[in-house]
Image (cartoon, rainbow, N blue to C red):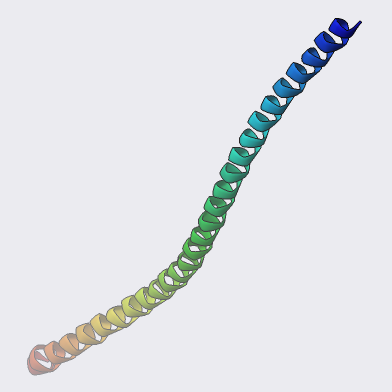
Length: 103
């Protein structure tokens, strides 16, 4: 009976030793997984911050482009008005110099 008890005790000790090694390996894996998750969380936070910055800059760029478009339209209108006034002055001068002298 004592040898059976001794063999059973050795089997239980061996089983407990394997269980302890398995638990240590699982603990190491869990620790590694926690580090990977922390690194991923930091990367996501950094990416979110960069995305927010880019979004803000795109909003400012859109606003500036809209303002430039409005200024471009205004500049075109002023230029066309200037060309019209210039053409009127040229026609007036030609009328005074040529038409009024002939007739």
